[in-house]
Length: 294
Image (cartoon, rainbow, N blue to C red):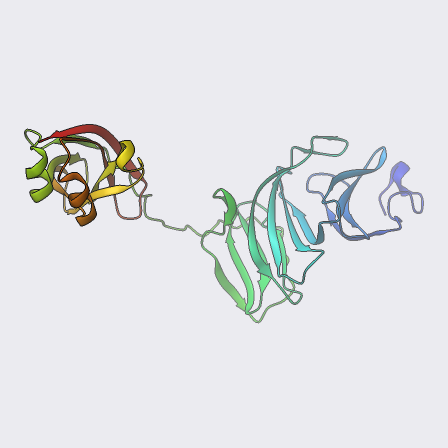
């Protein structure tokens, strides 16, 4: 029991209707989940203060606060189904009484089931540990990847282990060596020489030059326009694997249906769309309008 004005019996250590208490790092107070498992409340000098509430949509089976009090992890299960629990990462935005509502960052769906889970922060805030079906796991701190959390360096450290707690000593995080993210290729897209006449293009295709700054794959699509085809209809296509940076020739050839449709026309207006992409990387796209005449 603490000394001073908080030492009287049941001043801070007797609160009905709450479960799963956790110390708030760097403070003399604890946070706790309400008995309905919907929200988290924190002690303060002015008494109990509501921190955040999931409004009955989820049950909170566990929560933990990072040492700098900047992030909160919760383990949640939907109240309307028996789906496995999810690990949710929140940006704290302060703690009661001086706080703004926490901000949702990302989650790990299907995180736990059958009493597993209970994620806790390491003392230095760079790692987390939790209980999985095969034992205790450790990973780097959850990383926001657009609503879904990544757990870098996830590894089993105690096969068959159950109860997870960190010691008080800071332990350097295991370095997770990752390959650099795939680069976005640059793209210059031009005709390879003069634009051919319509009938020649229908027979042999339209040649283009694609210039990039690295290896990858290039695709050129011919998109129909006007009253004979919707703008998004692909009427021709060509592709090529790019073994190195530089300029590459790609020939886009018409489909059989497009050949039959355009053979009797005097002129055809198309959109040529070129796309280049490194392996596993984002796409770079450019377009140009072309007009074929007989």
